[in-house]
Structure formats: structure tokens, C-alpha cells
Length: 446
Image 1 (cartoon, rainbow, N blue to C red):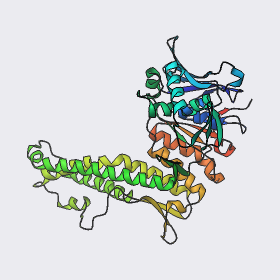
Image 2 (image 1 turned 180 degrees about the vertical axis):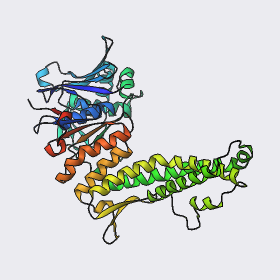
Image 3 (image 1 turned 90 degrees about the vertical axis):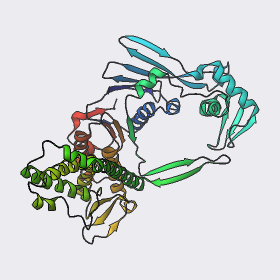
Image 4 (image 1 turned 180 degrees about the horizontal axis):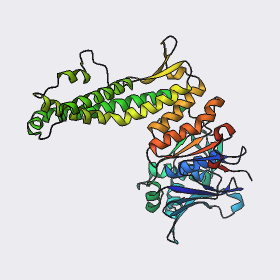
């Protein structure tokens, strides 16, 4: 099931958009303030079930149209505890509807129930739920985290679900109806945000303010690649052990061994593969390893049966490394083409780093320029973290990129898509990003 259209109603209380998505890349462009970033954030929040983001977005409704004909609509609604609505801010909740085969199924939210509201109100009257939330009087609270005063409805809107989960005897599941969850789980959606160079992780403390830990994304993706290489090596080792354990019995039972010429041809091919995997950092060069190619001259009719099975087993073992190696090669080809005076190298211990082409000195990822880090982060996510049928949302891909890189960006993106089979939505201000791909654009101008 693929997403083919998204419709926004009264975004910021004003904008109505209907966006048809292309099979490969859709480029959104428009003036500042027209909602490009907010739309990407909304799509990402919905499919990753972060519904609190939708509740706090100035939006009346968002609808998702799928290739199967199914339509999912999410509306922001309000309920009021204060009978005088002009004095009340209201509690925002979400209402869901699914249209399939011209039949509409409507699902309300648990937050729009007396049970939920009564539990939260009773608790707030008797307890202080968080150290940063101070009660001023019966109906007013001071939120030290944001430096704002909140009435009862605002407290419930902001913190009600957390309070319910922490202190109710019942456990509040994700307040998303199961049929809606089934639709959302059918797609993987990822957002590459404009602030992609750092990651802020909140470290929760039982008492006092939470701590914030800042990490450089380039360091995190280098560690991630290191782990991917280690995991692949482990799979390779497990397969090798299994093959080696059964080799004697299979050698005896082998009925149709390869010919001497076939073995020699396969050995040369496998040596080429092995060199590739060493070059991509997956295998290490062994000092005492004579290599597959060195066995070619020793092949005779007397050892043909054993070496035939050896070649077949080795091919199967090396095939376990092919997928990751292909991704690393694609990543390297794009990065080495764009980066001047340096080349990227790979290793299971550090993932990747760079060496200069003029002195062979090492450059760590965090020492790269801002534009280089943006390219690394974007292309790494696209190549290593996007699978078939994933929808990737990229906000302002042009940030810190040289004009030449911007002109090449969509072509490089399409090259990656042809290998990985995902689709992407870009939000950009840059005509250089669009370049000659105006057929892929959606204008958000009035």
C-alpha cells in the first residue's frame, strides 16, 4: 500500500492543500510561511504515531489517500470543561475516520470520555504530577519548563496522557483505534529534518529538570555503520561455521562437482568479490591468507570434488556480505565524487572516516564542513536506513550545500531510489535543487 495523495484543511487556519505524490520524488516549493515544513512534520508524526504533535498543530484536518483506495482522515476537535467557552481554551483531541469501498467508519478518542477527564481532574486536585508543574490555585498551574501559566484544560491537553499512564491503575494504550494503527503500520515514514546535524536526547530524572545530551549526527551514523558491519560479519561467521561443520559429509555425498575450468573461473570471481569486501571494510586483510585466487593453480582432477564444494560454499558465504557492501559502495561513490581533496574509508571499528588525498592524513567526521556533514547525514539515511516502500521526507536539502551539489542532488537521489525502491518528498526554497525536474514539483503558491 502506497501513499498517493495528502490533503490538508485549514493549515494555520487558512491554507487548504491537495498534494499528489509522484512514484519517486515529489518536490514541494513555495513562499516562506506556506507550511512546507509543518506538512512534512505532520505526515511524519501521523505515521510514527506521535499524535501529540498533531494535537498541537494549527490544523483542522489531514487526509491520506492510498493506492488501495482507502482514505484515512484525522480531525482536530475540542471539548470544553468550562461552560463559558469564551473563557475556555478547550481540550484538543483527535477523531479518526476510514473510508473504504464508499463506506465510512468513524472512531472517537478515549480523551473525549468522562472517564478519562474525571481521572485526570481528580488527580490534579490532590497531587503535584511533575516537579516543574506548580499549582497556583484551584484552576491555574505554572509550568516552569516552558515559563507559562496553564489552566486545567491546558494541563490536560499537554500532560493528561502522561499523568494517566503514570498514575492511573489502568494503563492507557496508544489512543489510536486499531484499524487506524493497522493502516499506519503498513508504511514506514522517516523525516530528515532541517536541524539534522545534531540530536538532542532527553535524559529523564526522577526529580528535578531533565538533562539534555547533544550528539553530532555524523558521529552517530559512523557508529551505526560500525555496528552494521559487525552484525554482518557475525552473520558471515555463523554461516561459515555451519558450512565448515557439514563440509566432510557434503563432500562425500556431492554428485555433480564443477569442472576444473568452472572451479578456476569461480575462484577468480570470488577473489574479486573478496577484495571488494576488504575495500569496503567488511573483511580484513589476513597476512597469512593465501586468498582464493592462489588456489587456482593447485586445482587438479584429484582434488576437484573437494575444491568444487569449497568454491560453492565460499560463494554462499560471501553473498551474505553483498547487500551491505553494495550500499557502502553506493555511499562512497556519491561522497567521493562530491568531496574535494579527501576520500572516505570504512572499517568495522569506526564505521567510516576520511583521509586526505594529498597527505593521507585522517579527518574525523565531526571535523568536516557543515555542507559535508549535511550531505553525509542525508545520503547515509537514504542509503542505509530506507527500505523498499519507505517514504522519506526531506526538509530543505539545500542547507549549506554548494550550488554544484544542489544541481546534482535530485539526480543522486533518483540514483539511490533506483537501487532501494523508496519514494521521497522534498520541501525546498532552492531552484537549484529543482534544476530541470519541474515535472516533479508541486507549487504551494496561491
